[in-house]
Length: 245
Image (cartoon, one colour):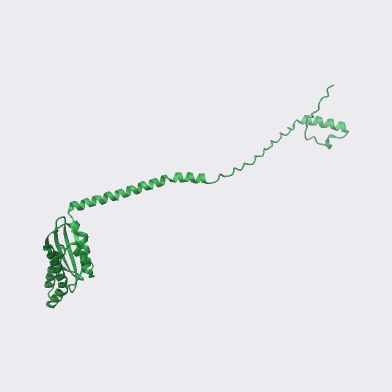
């Protein structure tokens, strides 16, 4: 019974806080004090934070179907972060700042696992427009994640290098397969090289003038004419077979 009343009170408190978003801005605007506006936004954000961190999963699911954009975004942000942050311990420092579009309120919250900052954004009239949770990780966790990311990156690089090496090594097998798949080229016999006939050595002409003169005189005497009427140009040996009896 006590748990039921606690849930009812938290839902009622959250509803009152959301209703206060539409009332406080106009009251602060009438007063015309920017400090009063920021103080009112801090108080409202702290009350809303206190109500959000105490919601159960059933209550979160109920608010997610409310149809209000800010409420839905706040429930989704808290649902995705609460398991990592752990149990709620205490509220910390709250800071309000004026932005170009309105105001921002940052609330430090302490949890059992990690601390976090809940950031609320408002327009110029004080209506909430955005909600986010920034987890504050310790240096040891950040260094561990950085080391894991580095190892993962190096592992991916080496894996890609090994893959490329394996692919390149397969190219030689692909070349052999392609050579085997191609039809064998028809061997065309080379035409025979013509045999060059060696020129017969010309019969050396004798340049013995005396022999030529003697032969010319003999021919002239045989013909009964003068040796000046003909010219002996060459002398060849006649091949005559001897008759054997």
